[in-house]
View 1 (spheres, rainbow, N blue to C red):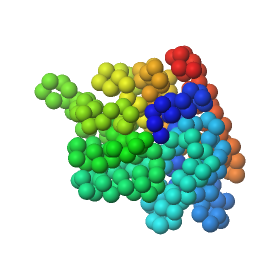
View 2 (cartoon, rainbow, N blue to C red):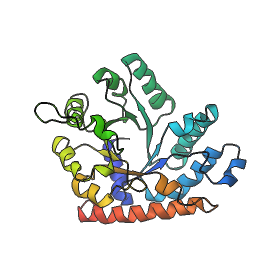
View 3 (cartoon, rainbow, N blue to C red):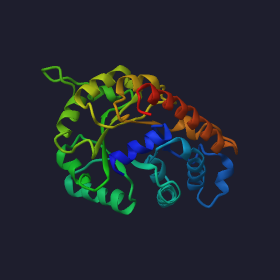
View 4 (spheres, rainbow, N blue to C red):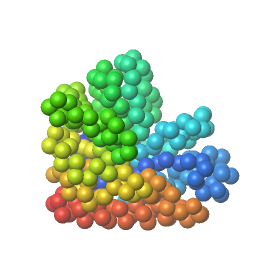
Length: 276
């Protein structure tokens, strides 16, 4: 999906919501365990209920890989269902891959050729030759980890060099030489708040994937205040707060209700920034 297509979807729907598809077999409603593939049954219901209110889905690979072959089948069926029934959705494989060049080439082939997702999250620690194999696929995106929402992010990402430049800023400036804003986004956690100003100072035009709104306590209003640009430039993800809004048979409707709440708030912010 090209950037202009993503922006068009954001404006048309009045939403920049990404729904995280993190189905834990121990947390999904118990009645689904009787299904042939419980994870896919859960995802399908969530997707069909929330699609009107979001522009992206982000399956986290760990929740599928933990179940072996059955989980991988659920992932493939989930992606196929989105593509066939909700083709305007941007699909992100939250895989956090990144390895030496020939290994990254195979990861890229797996996600962009076999699964045919729109984007993959990539870890930058091994440098340029671990990231560039994911680039060059037409309409596909690398989403590079920059400043994450977890507590341990401060262990490395905020380390300063002798000139006071922090590691996440080096990631932003260095990776900007590898790809443009049509191919690369960055992960920036919603819990970072005002630090979005620092991100935008270094990367004023890049799209940002923003986890941490909802269960992790990030503020949607702060993210928009400091991170929104003239074509939005944000995909804000919520996972647990949406998909586990109910443990009962009404789980899909509860997910839709939570998605709508977020989408309505996003529409207000988009109007305030004159984007819609």
